[in-house]
Length: 270
Image 1 (cartoon, rainbow, N blue to C red):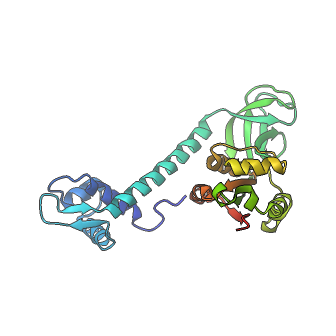
Image 2: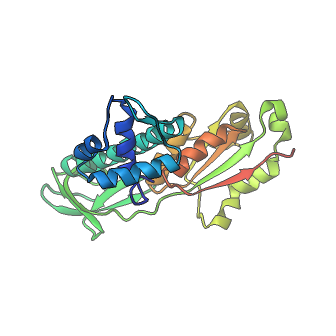
Image 3: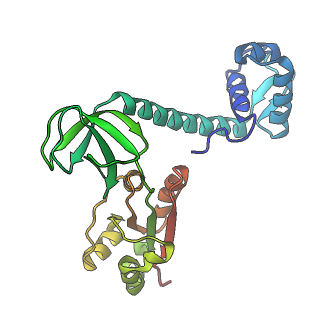
């Protein structure tokens, strides 16, 4: 996740946030005291923000004003910061919680077990793995097992997403789709990107659903396609989705925000 990667971006964000409050007679000294930095540092950063058109200077009770460009920057970074904070909190809860896995053999309370992911599910057994945990109670092979005291990192390769874009109904819908290309892409076309297999299929839009039915493609994901695809990819699954027209843009933005690798195939004959 891209958050304050460049030097000074966090300070810029904080200064812009203070200026956006539009307090009368706001001085550089006031900002410096709130942020715990020197007045000189505030001055230098404000000069940069003015040069980059995030802030303007005017005489009057509130000498510094944030521009629309600055407001957009603060909003974007605040959203990224919130997402990052949510991820951190989720990670912290991970270490305090009881986690479920599927036992591949009989396990006893107190045993230390290895953990691994397969087909998007977490499994536990007595093998040595890069991640391990302690069994909370006795279970039989195949049972769901509660685990505590998770340690290490689960060995997992992030999955990838293949997006097949289809023509909208106003552009011919399924009649303007390259069915042979779609068949090839589903059968083996994805292998050129180093993807061994497709684990889950998704479809968005009526045209996509029609083509999926016509080609007997088993649809696993129909709703919240972007978030579901991201969640599946983070569990190591590869996903292929059929999407109509511009609907792909929102999905692509979400994948890029989460650094999920994706490939786009245009299946329109127009």
